[in-house]
Figure (cartoon, rainbow, N blue to C red):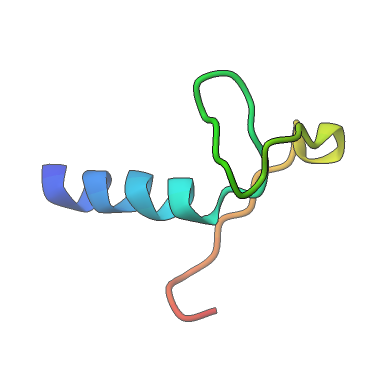
Length: 46
């Protein structure tokens, strides 16, 4: 269970397309105000 949670956290971090606070990525250094209050959850493979 702990490994599954860790994998989900890593997957979400890799898909992140903005930087905010401690979640900084060189690929997307800017903030995205539109995505601030948006969450997307989808089953694997979709």
